[in-house]
Length: 248
Image 1: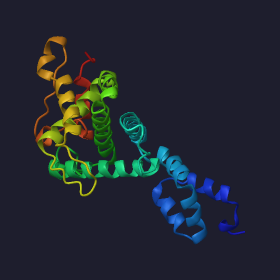
Image 2 (image 1 turned 180 degrees about the horizontal axis):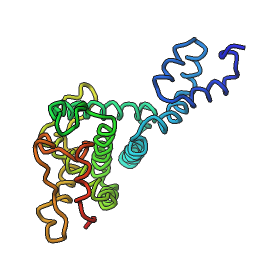
Image 3 (image 1 turned 90 degrees about the vertical axis):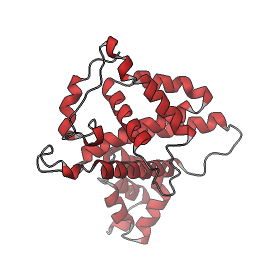
């Protein structure tokens, strides 16, 4: 018996058990029958694989939940967004990828041979940290620009631990000072009011110069380890996070 003779539900389970999306893609391209299984079950297959394959899945899920709640709250009489949930997930992921690529390009970590032990390329763990803070900022932007959800935006910040706040503070510095909004047709623009509200909120909440009396302080890392002052997301600077004191 060949694989395409198996019942559709078994074929769907095979798709759902694959290690990552490269395997899903290869399997779907094997035959018309398998491609049809993928098309008929893509949301279920996508989320089953995403939980295992994507390190930022929970953060991406939280963003989608905020986007759906914002749409329902502000436009209750409008139809649901044209994108399905897994299509929205993919759209958001593409934006996160583009943002991370830009951050990598301006940081030029390939010039930090000494600090990075001869392995200067940006690593998966570093990309995951950046994207996590990117999703956090986007979630905060979504909540803060929906009047009825603004209390949730503040609670989102209050619930962040000091390391998460350091990540938000750093990605705001990138978004406000270096990002050129070069995201193609993603519709992502850090100069729009949607993003400015979140950037301002983080800036006020993480006003480090006003936190000295409470025992919280900004960590200064040398330029030979922190290109453009960025350091929170890099593997070679993770030991500095131990200097961040308890959340005020």
